[in-house]
Length: 321
Image (cartoon, rainbow, N blue to C red; front, side, top):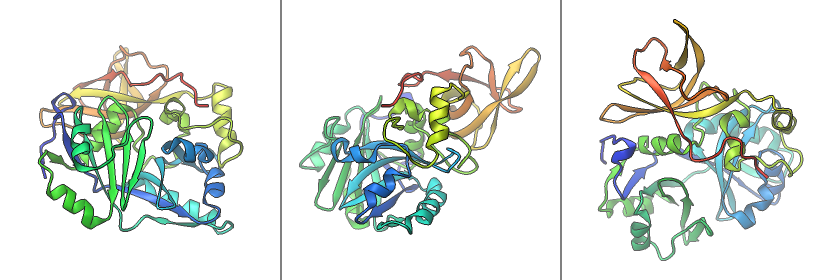
């Protein structure tokens, strides 16, 4: 395992990430699709065609328990997400699942790693007979599931049992990093990273899910749907997810971000996730006012080093179908 923490600009052309902090909620059974359709923001009925969906699981007030990527593997639906957001989402899904023909549990005997980088497809082609792409983002090969996640940096998620993943990793001749690198990529891609203390704190639009096709506004009712629709059509949402960078900034989940007003500093938002490279370049995912000016002076509370808003790879005004 490579314990170095490169900055985004220092990422190798091909590298692997051991996703030790990754997990999934599994749903199976006769009514898995029908049940999940009534629980999450994405159109589960389109999974058969799309193969890979982004969505959120909310409470009745429209506050997000988890933001996930949804795939089908071995007749199960897997809600892929950080292990830190599984517990409460799982408990809520199981609470209502007793009324449906569905089995819900944390996926077991599954291990995850990723191959990423601008030339990652070359490594994938050397390892597997078929490689997923934009048109076919999920491929199942025997016990292995491969998921292509498009972005500024290509990512391929590999899912298998512990033994098979261990064998693949043991034979890789590329740098292998820990889960921190995945967090860096999620921050730069603008995909929400939810963990305590922010579970059930934000509606989906505050996490930019409408901009990454994570909300269907045509699918019908689901838990929290009234709040989500009201936010969208009445323009009530005042916050959004941003990516920030700074040099020699110490940041952790839960830290307060301040903005300068005259000679004073006032709270501007919260840190959802952070990554600090060995060269002291810091990357932060934060919730701020959605009309914040890029020129606004920002900092972590009581720190001297400033933060800069960096562009996300999508348009915040984009709307889901």
